Length: 469
Image 1 (cartoon, rainbow, N blue to C red):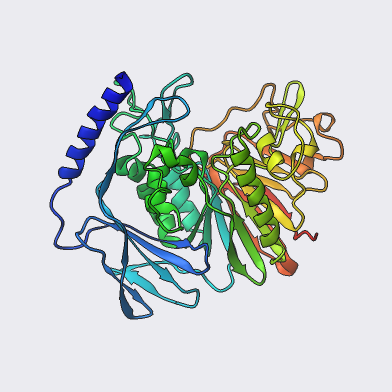
Image 2 (tube, rainbow, N blue to C red):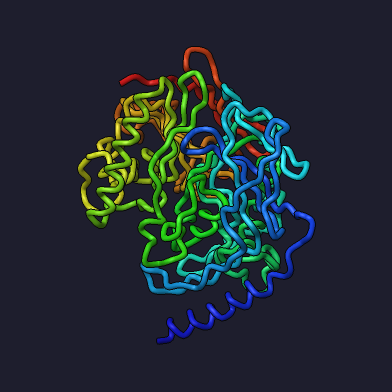
C-alpha cells in the first residue's frame, strides 16, 4: 500500500511537470544535435529541441522535414521489479526528431548547425566509456564531486581533448548516466546537481559535457547496465538508441522491461571490410543466467555475432560487460570473464560466482578485439587463443581502486601470478587515470590502440591484428 501510494503521488507530480513545461517556442531552440550510426547501415541525424515541431534538415543542400521520434513527455513513477522500490518519474521537456541519412551524403545541417557524417573509410576512432558522475545512495553510497570538472569528474575535459584528435567515429562502450540519487545536503562537491532519470540529469551527465565530441564525429553507442529499464533506460531509448522507438519496448512499462532491455547485435561498417559489431548485453549481469528466456536471448545473440563476424576481415566486438577482464589481487587471479557471457557462448561455468579460468572466456574466432567498459579502469588483456579484451571504463566515472598490494609504478602483478601462457605484455592494467583511447587504422587490417590520460600522456600502446577463423 505504501509503495502504491508513493507511486500515485509521484504520478501526480509527473503530470504537473508535463503541464508546466511551458509554451512552445516560436523559434526552434536546439538542445542537442548529433549523428548515430544506424543498425541498418548509414546513420541517423537526431535533434533535441523545445519547439512545437521538428525542424528541417539540409542534406547536400536539399531540405527535408525531420520525423518526430518522441514528443515532450513524463515517464511516470513505477515499481522497480527486482527490489520493489520506486523508479521516480522522469520528465523530458523536449521533442526528439530524427532523419535517416544514407552513407553517401556528404553534408548535413540543422538550423545552421553542421552534423558530422561518417566517411566511407573510417581511419580513426575515439573510444570512451563510463562517463557520468556517480551519485548513488544505498548500501554502497558514492558521491562524486561533479562540480569539480577539472579533476574529480573531468568528462568535459576528456570530450574536448578527444575531439581535438579529429576522429572519424566515436565509440562509447556504455554507462552514460550516473546521477541517480540527490546529492546530500551540505556536500559542496555535488551540491546543486540534478538527479534522477529525466532530461536535467541526462543533460548534466552527458549532453552538455559531451557536446564538443558529439559535434566532432558520428557516434556508435553501446548500452550499459546503467541504461537498463530499471534505471536510465527510458532516456536511453528516447535520445540515444539508434533503433526505432516502439511502444512496449521503450522502458516505460515495468511489465515489459524484458523487451525494452535488449536489441539484436548489428554491425557498423568501417570500410575495407572492417566493422564494429555492437551487442546489447546491458542486462546480462555478471552471474549465471537466471531464466531460460535470458539464456535463449543471449545464446541467440552469440549466433548473430558469429554470423556478423564472418562478413568482415577485421571485426571488433563492442559491448558493455567485458568478456575477459582479469582481476589480480593478493591471492592471485580472481576473475577471468563472467559466467553469464560464458553461458551465452556455450561454455560451462562453476556456479554463480565469478570464475577463474580461460574456459569462461569465449574464443570468438574472427574477432580482433573486444571493446568494453563497466570496470572503471584501463585494461588490455590478451589470453592465449582469445581476442584481446580492452576496457576503457575510465572516462569520467569515479574510478575503481587497485587491489592491494599494488605496484605503485605500474599497478601490475608479477608474471608468476598471471595465468599460464600470459606474459606481462599480454596484461596491462592502469588504475587512477581518467582518459580515453584512440584506434588508428594501419596497413593489412591492423589497428593501433593508444590510450591517453587527461594531459595527453600515453598510458598504453598496442597493435591489434585481425584474427581468422
